[in-house]
Length: 421
Image (cartoon, rainbow, N blue to C red; front, side, top):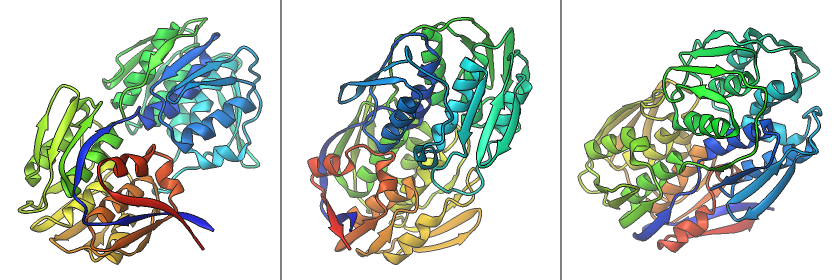
């Protein structure tokens, strides 16, 4: 038996959706917290399967994980031991690679299986490894495991060939205890990096420049526990904003940071979506009439996020003419287009671009979430399609969207889980 999500399309949505804490920040904040020699309380933790996988890995290391409330956890490293991370959870979760930087920074030694996650084309971790080597670590790959050793980490200047979020955060974590100053040049600027740096600084780290392309880290001897609240999830917020534009009548999305969403909201204005932006919320008056085609090119933050192009494609099938999405980050990120075609979309994929011809009526069909954001795209398509859509492989969706069925039901969607053979 397999659990699927079913959606009966055509219902107009009304109400308020509250956005949870950032998935992409959470999966780095939890490994970062093990650098502290004291309890760390993290508030605003989303209820997603990635957090469960991280908790399993923490418990493997002897770290106490105490769930204080529905969105708050306490992480205590008092009885922590540096053991090889070979649990199956590593394979489920790409962000398990953050344990490399955290454990290397704390103990000078890491043994970890090759991290997994959604397949979006080549996602090498060579930038992470080069950074660790520049700090003085040796890297070996042995029987499916990375083994990193550093008798001493010494601050240095590191230039990233690509402004990688993962490499920026991982090197930052490894460098907090390094002797002297580490400078990361061509650092990624995503808000999640600022959030991780904020947590580390609360613990006692000396990090400056997070959110710019040059980050400096002055090594310290000791980090202590602290309290930290995670920033809202800008990708979850973007997904619900697009969803409201596609299927909503009047939907308010609250607990957002509008500045983090400017690349999307400027494109939605170009598309012809009716929006009212407030200090920490946005109200969308949806409607598929007279949407204009647009061109999008994904870029590192503050450019248009690669994670948003898939959900937006479902809306672009309803624009009056041809829209073009050019993917510069993950060239394999077009599997959702083939699923949308099963529902009646007219899309030509010519990597690295997709050409979306609209408007096309969508019909309910059986489709598969090939990755997390493809799943979000198919939910939006299901909400505007005629008939019932069945989405398989929903574990991908549950990796990054908390209580999605419940949140959509609350604003009037006909959506439910069901077990099928």
